[in-house]
Image 1 (cartoon, rainbow, N blue to C red):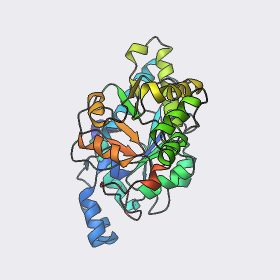
Image 2: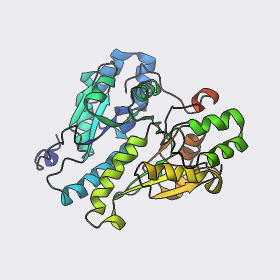
Image 3: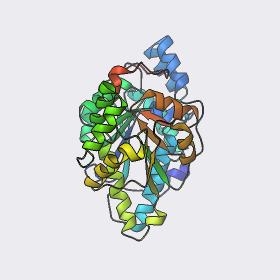
Length: 338
């Protein structure tokens, strides 16, 4: 047992209805690729036996690890400014692992000094009911089937992948980057582009620039981030806010950017930086931003960002999922422990 952690002052967890709840699977929080190979090639019993035999050996960090650490840094700042507030990030480890694997996960969390007190080990059952019970604002998993299931229930969700390269990111400022269409916004405009081409898309956006787009699956998460940002602004800390948000879109600024920005304004939401790339690759710009997490609905952009070291997540939502080929990143099977 980590005795130093054991004797640290107890930090009370906020009530789920007051918190911004991030549900994360064990396979994206930690690197469990070796264990996954055992499961796939030797079966569940050998997988559980291996986990129990190695339960004192902590897992190394996975793709969501730096993001979760950044949430904790924001919480530290919020508690300094608002000691009695429950408007904080609350992380729930949501895994379909068998409960026998729980000890190794707890030992790993203590080893890395993560403040995760809420666990759901579902033993292979769907996590959707638990996600709803926790009022989940964002669900991150290696399982695209469960991610689609969550999105279908109106829960913001994205698929994460184990990456060979991950850039160092800020330890004091949470940076979150979003694509626009089919992520923050609906896929309305993307449908026009796919069906009628670029010129019709530009015409459509110009004709509808004063009509806000409908919301996409991640709009609520941006809203939650903005709510916490305002708490810092109210204390005069706009320029020292530990949360920074980015819109990184293939839209062109002059021809289709107006509607995107007016939509955000109509929602009462701010975005700190907006990058309109006019179809240019997103990877190089994301490499400069160094976000803890980037959300996009197209695997082409997810892969391009990941190749340059950005932790990129796939949001399997909208028309692009029906007209593009499966990405080259391996999508996990739904039966695998997560």
